[in-house]
Image (cartoon, rainbow, N blue to C red; front, side, top):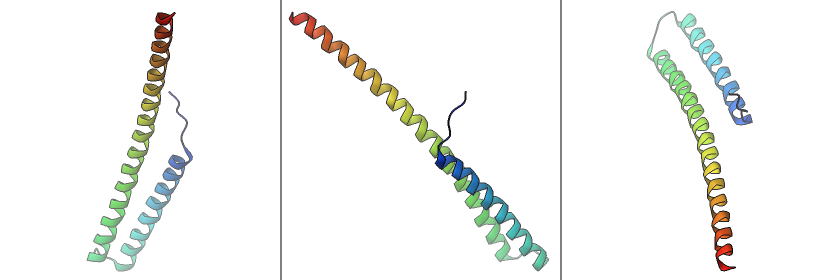
Length: 95
């Protein structure tokens, strides 16, 4: 099942990977410079992990909204076809 990805989703993946690598590199550099774990480093790790979690949640929201939009379009098409069939039956009854 191949689904076409939107430009937003592609950009989201690229930005998430870039932030992941950059965040890890910055935290690693901070650890190498300080030689031990301090409160600033704990805060940086927590913020970095929170950012990664937000990217994952945003990806799920984007995927679910796209699926929901597809489902709404299908239901709208079904309702329109039922409406047209009802109109045809009513027109036949009149003649």
